[in-house]
Figure 1 (spheres, rainbow, N blue to C red):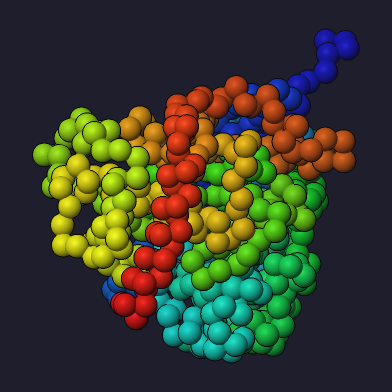
Figure 2 (cartoon, rainbow, N blue to C red):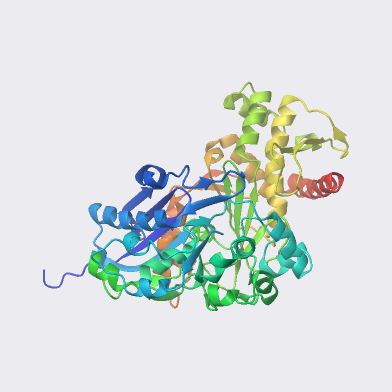
Length: 533
């Protein structure tokens, strides 16, 4: 029709542990198309469980690279069946599970640049990798390399100051060091090492894509302040590593090229469709949850995780600092604790006859501050402090052996949220009058629990009605890349504030009560750490 202008859409992808997801959004940031591929059920030939292969040593965890590529082939077909007009896609970005690594074989770049549109990607790239199985974030087999890396740079604190985190087994630097040590010939045959995020971007642009600053922050190799590879960390692995990683590291919202001829010819993409740097799933989630500069996102799941936006970070041993995907001059903090919902469920089972209704009654029957009692509950050995067990302290900070059921219940919930707050503050977070807490995960539906969260942080708690924040964040970053000169990210996503629902307000005396408890909790945690050392 003459004068008709096709509506532009922006496509976001997310290669998570168990599936490859996608959404397309329009100018109004509305989701207009979705599709996904579940690895275990849609690609059974790879025999994954939960999207991964667990090895016999119970430490090594990998995933098949070709499974991810075949999933992209399937995803494109499903998007077309679901009604996406590829010619309307103005821009693409994506995210991937953090810390994993992909090893392209020498000559693979030439193959990427000369893909034939009549064939599937997985058929043409089947011989392009020196390792068919990629180490992923669940891998814990690199303890030796972690300790050696910390020692090489002058200690865990120094490594955190440089890279934003102490050495962690799942982080890419230690994984690469292990490959160099145990599979030297594979490393020597490697032309390019990618994170999972920029590996996926490579497939879209038909060439090697650069690592972005946010996902690159999760490697223990990047100087997060200078925003360049740290020479000490690189040399710990091998001096030629930068040649394999690529010396260019780009902001997470930077355009890195146009979609390749393969996708133009096979699916009908517009040749002017641009591709934005792909990032990690955690940074993409920060973008997808539309967090303001004073906000905190708290995910209350099997593990309790918090995301925060930081202008002046303070790297520490008990959290992570990444470059911010929205503003390259800012940072994001990430805090993760293993003992989350399963610990709350244990206390429910032992104190409340396995009933959430009784649990909530006990929680509400005990006053804020819990008569000065504080508890630590670690079913599994915690990330920080590295201890397990239950530890209870009365109002005089003396350790006691037990609490009454109602005190135990509140001590568990208050303790978990005090722990998140003090570690957020240790990374540089400062609560203010405009601070909001965004609660996600299963426990965010429990009104009694989120009321404690509001009181501990002395801030209102909201829920967010849009799921899959990482894939949405990817689509939003694709759109933002072309608008950032004219509008801030927060102004662009302002219309999504209607998806925030207020579910709890802090009590008038919350600040007075919990500011004092935060200081006590911090001292008791330090004592606990020293006692267990």
